Image (tube, rainbow, N blue to C red):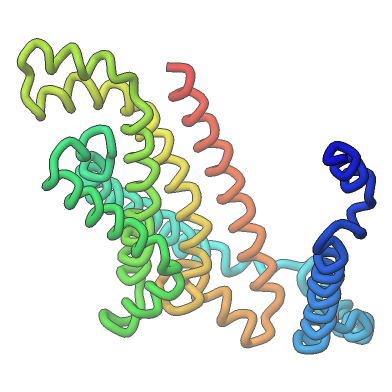
Length: 278
């Protein structure tokens, strides 16, 4: 009798099982809510492809200027682009200097052995999370208000944000090391410094270099955007050209940015590949 009742319950469709109809209704209700929210989002964001078609005449005029760059400003833009690359370089170096020692304090396999180590680990991890939470644009705007317009606020913004990113990547590389060399050095009576210098650092050095080069590549792109809020570099002048409707100069700046960023992207990729093969 009991077996027949279980067989009958199993044979029932899912909608006829206890609470089955309620579950189906809830799923339909959630789906309806998502569709409604998406429809409201279209209204609130004023999404209207017809506006894009209506602006075709203006786009034709803009494109007519963009295809004829103003090369007379190229020397000035080269100086500004060099400033942008330098901002990214110094910001990345600053982040490396700060995140390198901190990353060892944020590695579980090195710090969770004692109560004091756990406390330091938690604090350093929190610092990394906080620094990653703030976008470079927001940090750059804050530093512009503190120290004024120029490349220095951009360096500080890129440096602090990169500390959070590199610190996380560095510490995760340390946590993924082979514990064998570390245990061997400890068995020979090596102290904490010797363990890190001879057992940890040789294993993570290639990854540290690759992450640092990759971060510099990212910071070059970020430094262009930071110029919009007055943090130096070519971005500030690019915004001025846009505001003054000088699209020929905008075109020249875009071409220079594309060439430089593409060249540096290939260079950084080549370096990372060489490091990976070493």
